[in-house]
Length: 433
Ligand code: ADE
Image (cartoon, rainbow, N blue to C red; front, top):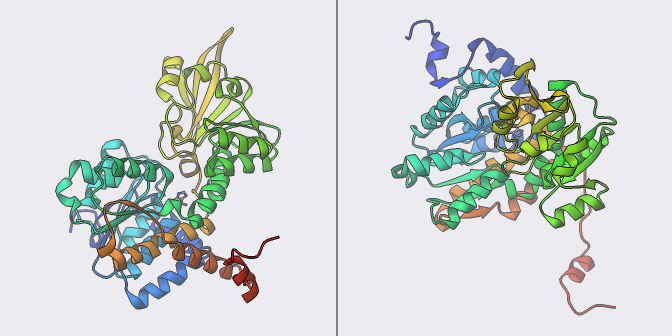
C-alpha cells in the first residue's frame, strides 16, 4: 500500500484533491439525484438489462453532482467508466473524491488544475482504451485523434454534450478527420432547449451573483450572443430587473432579440454604458482592448461560453500593465488607464465558464434531461453500431420524445392526444378552405 493512503483510497485509481471531502460529495450527489427522476428511471432499467456491458466509456465532462449521477447510471448499465474533467475550473472536488472513494469510479479531476495536469487527466482516461467517448467541448476527441491516432480505431462511437464541441466535430467531419461516429447530444431538443436556455440562464447569473453579490435590478447588462444560451441569460437578467442590451453578428438572431424586447447594439456602443458584461457566443475576442477602453469604472466581465477565449484577457492584462489583484475569491480587478487616472475592470472566474467556475453549473432538474440523452444515446449507438459511419449524427427523435414524455410524467403533467379525425386531418392534403 502506498504510504499515507488508506485501503479505500487505493482500491480505485484516480487523481482528486482531497479525500476528506468525499462525505460532502456523497451527500450532494444524493441531493441532486432527487431532482433527476428521468435519469433515475433509466438507471433502474439499466441495472436489470445491463445494456452497456463490455464497453469502456471515457467521460470528459464537468465533474459535478449531476455528472456523478450520469456516471453511476452508466456503471449501473454495465459499463466500465473513467471520468476526467472537461474544464480546469469546473470540478467540484467533493464530487471527484466521492466518485473515486464511494462509487469506485476512476476519476481524474482537480479544481484549478493547470493545463499540464488537465491534459494528463485526459491522457489517463485515454490510457484505459475507451470504446465509447463522452465529451463536453471535444478536448478528449481532439486529443485522441491528434496524439493517439492508433487508438481511434478502437472506439465504437462517441457523444458530445455542448455546442462548442459539436462545432469542432463538424469541422473534423468536413476535413475528413473524424475517425468514428459521434452523436451530437447537444442538438437534441430536450437538451439545448432546456439546458442551454434555462440552465445557462439561471446558473450564469448564479455564478456572477455568488462571486460578486451584485444587484441585477436596475443594472445595465450586456449579453453577447443570442443563441439558446444568450436567450436564457438575457431573459433571466431581465427577470431580475436588469436593463439588457444584446450584441449579435447574426441578423436573424439580432431581429429576434429586438422583437423579444431587448436593445440591440454593436459591442463598441454597448461597452460605453454597460455595467455587467456576459459573453456567450462560442467565439474568441468578443470583449477586446477597444471595449475595455470605453467601459465605465467597475465594469464586471464574465464569460459563459465553453472556452476562456471570449474575453481577451491578454489585452486586458496589457492595458493593466501589472496593476491587477484578487479582490474577492473568484474576482480579479484590472486597473487600466482612464481619463484622469485609472479605472477598474472586474473579471469573474478567470474568464472561464462563470456558471461552473462561480457556482454549481446548471441545476439538476435540467441536467436530468441532458444526461438522460447521454445515457439513452450510448445504449442506441451500441444497438446501431453496424449502421453508423464516421459522421456527426443527431440524437434519434424517438429518444428526444421519450425523454420529454418521461420528464412530463415525473412532473405529474399530462398532455392531450390527437383524436382519430385530427390525426387524419394532419395527414391529408385534400381538405382546405
Ligand atoms: N454543464 C453545465 N452545468 C453542468 C452541470 N451541473 N453538470 C455537468 N455539466 C454541466
